[in-house]
Image 1 (cartoon, rainbow over the protein chains, first blue to last red):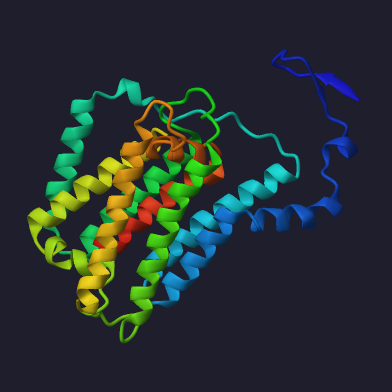
Image 2: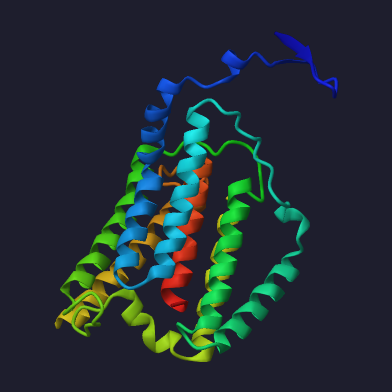
Length: 218
Length: 66
């Protein structure tokens, strides 16, 4: 049965059998959504971070993984994909305003104690807001990015994977996962002297915010 | 050289590798893409974009939050 929509946007199929997704496709769609590498990585990272004594990190990572899995599940069942519409366009935001906001954020939040609740609340809120913005699309939408040369992509991947493995090695060489080691320092241990001070935290937070702004425009 | 020094030397090596790749990428006929192109490519899908931004959020949590 075909009926014209009230808004006059052309015929819409409202045949129930045709519109209803095939029930037998639910399981494969659910499995496919779960095996998305991004979902898997976030889920594993969230679980291990959570059981290592960082429940907030675990909740954030697993929450994002769950949202992506649900989104992927819906799309694999044939639900329409909404067009990516960014919340706003980066070109319309003056660079000076971004720098001023990032500086104010870094100065104020850097004044809070490291690992304190006020710092945690602000970082969680900003991180969540950035994920929501990223969900809607790039703040600088343009053409499809060009394919990467496999050799070039492999070069960058090698550096990041090797760095991750080296960091993991140092972590596992510590007396325990929660006891720092001077002989095998991780990046967080090395950053302690800098991030232990207000100016150091402010510089770190400014760089973190700037990197986030860079990513939201990719 | 102590374990501490070796660990730091390897971290420095990774930084130098990253800087070296970025410099190589600036060549006109280079096969190495600049890092921004790598991010653009990885983040062309919703899953990739949200995953990378979630990783960035985790960095903030890891270094500054509880």
